[in-house]
Length: 314
Ligand code: ARG
Image (cartoon, rainbow, N blue to C red; front, top):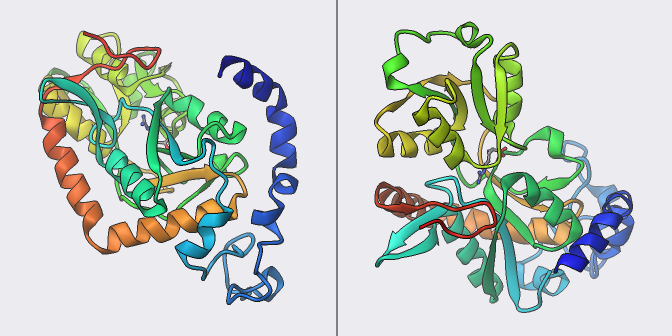
């Protein structure tokens, strides 16, 4: 794995540049595109806002599956960052730490729909897109916002959850901190590689912005007083505020690219189409709502802490 990673790292740039050429099946010559009901790119209706029509659109899952390139045969390999209850976290179930959360239920649902085993790889959030680009994982499922600044490195599925953004402080400071200007010169946290980090730069440009790899560490630093405030996804903020009553959500943070999506390798039309079919089925059937309710209940219980190398503490 290590040597492969090193080799692939060296190729990242070449790969990124060649991505479109590397995926002829997905990009331009989807097998059966001419004979199938899928509209050819040139015939795509002009009203479409998409940069290019997906040649797999209109195809059934069964028709798309043979064109899916799996990182590991017979498995759906998913990268996630389990520091993000109720999306993904380690719940203590029957005394054992287990990966849980509605993203993990969705991952299992996708694997089942594809008829393969699920293989979840925990990693830091800011490493997921890189692993996607090198093809080490098939999908990134980690509460990804469809951030337009990531458009060149990944594609994003339809939305499966609609959340928001929050600014979190210690409850004891409620009177002290009432606007972003109050944080000038103070330490404000956000997860590295996340849209929350950009929100911090935008909203608290004069603060001392601390980028941490894990949201759980941001929570710990807030509780211990090393951070004065933090930008956190609302569902996650609500979940951790329940666990740590010494914290509170101070106010909502505005953000345009709403919702959570699955990250797919850039330009991989087959994966994008397949994932969209499965996600829409999951959402429309109400199954996603069940996953969310279940995850919220689990997140209220005991959780295990995930440490740097993907291992579990204590
Ligand atoms: N929605 C944010 C983003 O896409 C944060 C996601 C963080 N996910 C996580 N599992 N820590 O940047």
